[in-house]
Amino acid sequence: MGVLRDRPRAFVYAVLVHLLLLGVLMFSLDWAPSVKPSAARNPAPVQAVVIDAGKLDAEVRRQKQLEEKKQREAQDKLQRAEQAARAAEQKRKQEEARVAELKRQEEKRRQQAEQEAKRQAAAAEQQRQEEEARRQAEAEKQRQEEARRQAEAEKQRQEEERRKAEAEKQRQEEARRQAEAEKKRQEEEARRQAEAEKKRQEEARRKAEAEARKAAEAEMQARLAAEQARLASQRQSAMQSMINEYVAYIKEKVERNWIQPPGSSSALSCTVQVRLIPSGEVIDAQIVRSSGDAAFDRSVEAAVFKASPLPVPPDAEVMQRFRSIRFEFKPGSL
Image 1 (cartoon, one colour):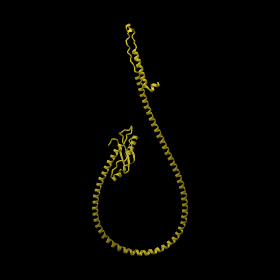
Image 2: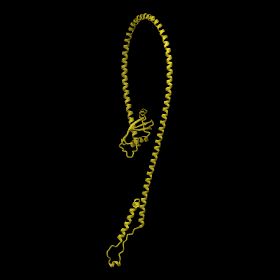
Image 3: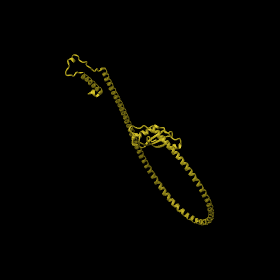
Image 4: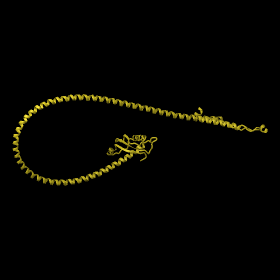
């Protein structure tokens, strides 16, 4: 059974050879029930099939060599599979080591943050105590200052009464001066009103002239604004046309560098956000609308970086708007 499992073709060939020998022997025997005397005295020549044992052995050896070659190929495939498995295991261990190192660093940062929080809390408590002592000292100082102010206030009250007496005397003198001033004010007011009327009429004339100039300037400004708007619209249209043209160039270059992942459909699409520097070098690429296939999305990001540097417009103003672009990647859509 071991021979049949390990070398099935060799076993089959051996069985066929034995069956062939058995058939030759069977056809070589005389199965007649009786033999005539004349035939017994002169037996007919026997026709035998001669089998070349050397050729048979060579065929068996050839089949054996073919089987051994297939076994070696199978062993080679198995070894390659084992090597791939060992490489994957090594990569997994490296990833686990990297994750462990990240966790260790995160724990270290957490401990440092806790220590910093404790230090800040201690500093805040010390600051609070110092602030409390300062407030108490300030309160005592304010109490002493309040007593001083009350003494000064009493002195000021007495001084105020003296000033009121003097003020009453001054008020009476002021009333006299106000009466005289009122008379002069009325006379001056009449003169001012006459001058004001004259100025009002002159101002009305200047205002009318200014309104006419303002209307003419407004009309000129409107014409200038319309012309600037027209030029700006043309410039904006040209800039957008250039942006669309270079986005198409970028799509084409990215698609040339795209490698379709095994098992992913070429009918998928996604939207990618790309950030560039003025030389066209890609500094970031992110999928902002996924295709639903993670392998497809990763392949698009890889194609963007592989296509770097990307074609960028020569116009500096257009390039400022081109530093971050978003486009839909859909294979075969160009």
